[in-house]
Length: 498
Image 1: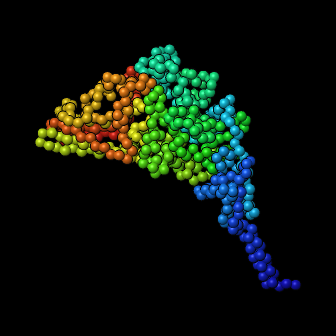
Image 2: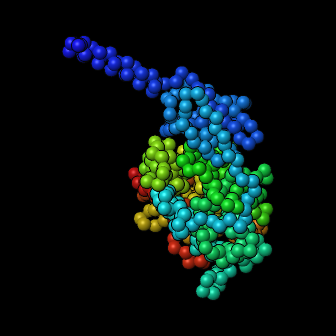
Image 3: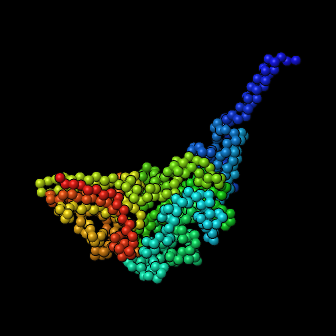
């Protein structure tokens, strides 16, 4: 019979043996191979990710990827352009992962998923993302009243729209707008010939399901094929497929597409020559910018993570992730005014002489990958100086002044226009882009480039007010169409002359 000491020793030996065996079972495997194949054989360049690890591995020309010191049982994902994302768990002998090819073609009869309505609506799983999208202009691109007041000939009640009207002035050009403003509309549906008649989910403009059915970009001229006509859509005949930038999306009907992290994706609607006029030029501006040279894409600013989203589908199978790696769908974070203020540095200076007063203003566009302002051709900013003496306005002796066509109330005042106005042949009146017009030199602020303007006023002035105002449309049309004032004061400053 064993003594208590022998029993204890035996127990400790067994415990040590079991512990050693257990550690051997869960210890890291020195090296294993993952082979990724498709219907046609090994897949080169497939992406392999493990959990929340930011490191992304890729397969070689034979579809292989060696994993050094992994943990047995680790879950990993495999993604490759043109295939559904697959998931597996690592085993000690290596893995062979077969990727399923995406269905070929694009089913035009596909019914779009509504962001809010129906059993499979987007908000049911992605509520935060959908709310961010809803707050942006993409969600109202087909029904925005200012857009429709420029597009239509009559309002819904029958009232004739005053001022510029594409439908009245160039009716054969009406169909061009839907490709960007209501890209989900297909042949035979209301809204294709007349966007004011858009129905159903397409009244939500650039909606979630449309954006996530983009497989890539067609090999056609950027800027001359617009919206859906530039995008390579992949709508399934049956089942489902969603495209996006994630290489490890948890659903089995997801596919990775690199275009979601490229400015080229945005170019489909934000670069366009219409009726011979370069109406939208943001993408081409970006191509020439320091941002593009450094590799910063549009999404780097306009979908920058804000740290508030850690799971795109909480409680619905979504994966908890690092919030600083999760894109925001607030395309204008903080709002347009905040973005303008963040992108413009300004400096003012007064130099007093015996008989005059010189005012210098310097502006520089910073932290931006395009000109300021950008987008629709009628957007502009006005730098305005108002000098006063005994409450009377004093005109400048020298320096740039604003023409009356910018704003009748500011004509002749010291100031600078930053925009791309289209004028008639007499250079006296503004015209809409569909009527062509004489292009004035593009005077917008170039990214990362400082410019200085100088004005000379009589010495008698007591103070000078300097303001920079952004306007989405020309003042004349704003007044004619009775729109609520959309002016944004980027900055305003008063300098006292001593």
